[in-house]
Length: 246
Image (cartoon, rainbow, N blue to C red; front, side, top):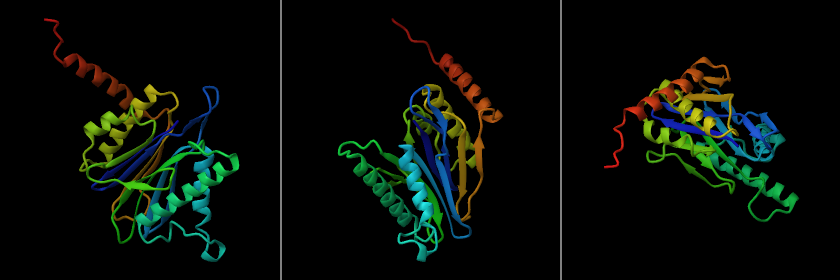
């Protein structure tokens, strides 16, 4: 399982992913699920992946392969697309191609065992920062004022705090704190999601990668948030008026 979140703020985009993959309780591994590409001064693109590992690795490899000089490839590159919308189209088409190829080899015709869902965020010079969720079919939706964040993977446990506490004007620091609470809630509820966590913060109109950080198991701040959130929830619960059977 996986948990990834992309938040669109007024000052930029914050993205966080876990790194746990499992094929049963006795086969747990760590794989990166966040990938970044940059043409400094012109664009920054971040992709997070959930789903079949072979599918997502193939998509990332193809996207990177297609960044070679034009004479060495026949497909468009996400570093040349004129807008984030066009980047999303390329990523969606690549995902659809990979799933169709793998399904064809295996003979699957129903729900694909090779399914994957992606979150794409970034900015291309001349446009605003944009955030997309890309589905296995290759189609996608864009974040808006009404839907300012996307989750993929094990989404239900970490969603309530995002819905209640998200503010488009919040600082990057508060956004990271919010995501840590969301991830901590998910990790405690589902053993298939786990640390380390990968974090990327992109600031509007910088056109290069911002802060990139891996949050390890011994991260002092994350552990403080985990413990403090548990205490705060118990205190808030105890402060609520008691229920009466009268």
